[in-house]
Length: 549
Image 1 (cartoon, rainbow, N blue to C red):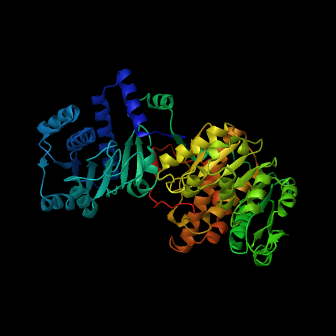
Image 2: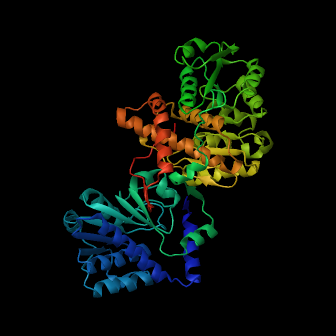
Image 3: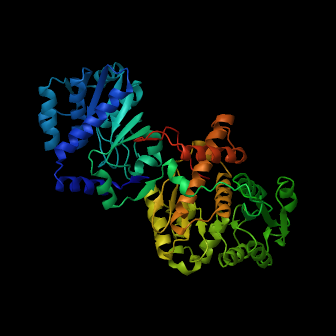
């Protein structure tokens, strides 16, 4: 697994390097060298423009410029000030070295001059603003960034694209859109979420030193990105001796007169994800609309509140009996949130069966806990697995912050951890959906590879809940592996969306298209896990990020 570090923790690792005898100057030379090597690997590079800032990120750029110059590539450095006026002592030293080596420097060029330089370049190296940047862009970097983006040159970013917060993934006033980002030491949250998904291109990790893995582990990653082979721990191929029941049965409690489709999609996704037997419990008033769309899935019509078009409270004990005869339960899609469905959710929480709560079940849970789930750990503390799948707005409601929900991957991780740490058990996982989805357990947080923009479609979240329900029905791993099982579900979901986009075009994917590709996606991930590619340092984030609806 690949560690993800908060920006401040990366600085702590840098200080640990110094304590172990690796100087900051040596780290800068290795960082700049890694960027130069990446540019040389791109091929067909005869000219490079290196845009540097005032600090150490710019220092990395000066080192890269000298290395490329020594390799025979035509290099020009664009600096906001003369090299001798740089603020950083480290950057000042490497800038003087580059100048003495014969690297040409252009200081504070007018826009027309910068355009001429960039339009003639094969590659632009962005070393303007590093991981310490936050807020809005200022001159001259706002103009430089616009010019880089319009130039047509291939763009390599040093550590983080300028303008992007490496911590939050936000770019308040725009930023560089890189083809490749060479990030130092470890991944950062902002590279993997929100605007970072669009801006980073392919991410290459430059570890910089032999002891990096140890120091990063000592610091404690905020999250981990699973590699394909990691999923082998939770992939259990069905035996030839199984029948439809031992393969895993799923009960889906969902739907209403207004939203029958959500129930259909969750149930069909569970079936496509490998559940041997799926039962769909729905309000009787919605049953006729649902039955005609799920030929292979038994539909159990239950008492309903005709006025609300949803379950009545009398359905709760019947649902409890059904739940006790099944391998896993999915509750919530399209169900509506009222007193009756709150009662149903409360009843299911008391059943000793793996439970996935999505959509309106989460709204019911918020009502049960007065919108402060972290204050009611006893409600969700149970022996069987419990998976909650909120998007950021739902997560905000669960935490009593309906008007100010988490607005970044970092804040979503923090909110999810407050819930799982309050519970304290290993059977609870929060699948915090977003442009980068986090699967958070009490001991670890995993960031599965995100899917394409086509995931941002109505019903996509219903599909995900069905997939995770099917995985739980087939195999319940030890508690510490539950986040990994959920991450596998997310990757199946995203891979299915990618396959669907290939078939229908990225703008034409509907949730039902994703369902039809779930089986193919699971097979593809199994092959990728069993036969992983050669060891790599790149994390491909070229696809525009989508959010699980």
